[in-house]
Length: 377
Image (cartoon, rainbow, N blue to C red; front, side):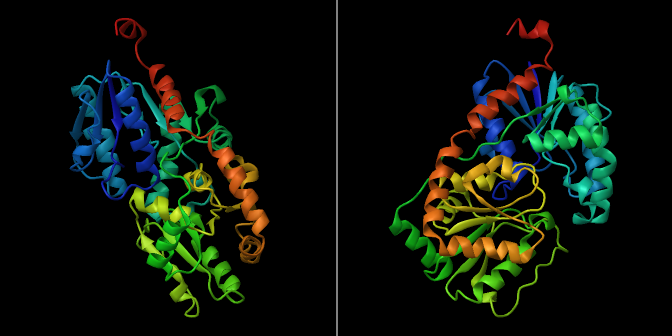
């Protein structure tokens, strides 16, 4: 059988959330099913490391999808022609986009609907595109995968989709995330914060990630703690997304940009705590990464985050800067709490597995494949 996969988010040296999700699952699915051919559709030249196995056929389709108009061209013309040309039996889109004009059976992963709840978080044209097309994608897809029960209920409610069409499959985290030695932690702190302890944020600098309020809360915390720093790992999604920082703490707020996985693991494992306070999220992979590293967590009491972290985090109101600051101060002053969160995080982290997720996603894809052909595989 021939399975097509939208891999336009596999961008070498710039794997954010969608890219990481696509990478972890696509690699496992291709390797686990040598009996099938997988056609990976890119929108620009690709890194050869993404040709995961001999049954993988990489295809570059024009144009690069850097603008909503180009989204339409890529999905409704270039991709549609390619699905027909390569006689694709089923198509999976890990970022939720579908080809509305193609007759090939499609399955879409819709991670969340923040753009429906907070349309102002995106540039105007992108927001209009998402709010116009995603209801159509949800209707077009024969199956929908999402990444939390919260998102499943949201998609079902907002788009009036039958719940039996939607499957919730939790994300995993890189298995290399784990605690590191004290000497390694010291080296990382020396490298990034001149040896001082730090709170950590990991994620794209998207408005919904709430980095502005996190920084304002850090400013309050820093008034009584002159040592603590805030390390922010991630790239800005939109050029106009400006973050304001007061001069008094500017030297203690460190922006690293994107970090490669091996480095990010060390940075996560060396943090005083992960401070992850988005006001809307589909899953929140950094929560699982922190739990694997035994790093305490302050999370927003919003959307899916309590579902993912449960008792392995303390929670705050993401819209209340004072409440975020209170949570940060609690982690700074209560070592017993931090130790307990570390143990609970390690225990909870074992339920999140990319291996298990890949099996579940494949089971959903397989439902789209013609049964008569499957019997011959």
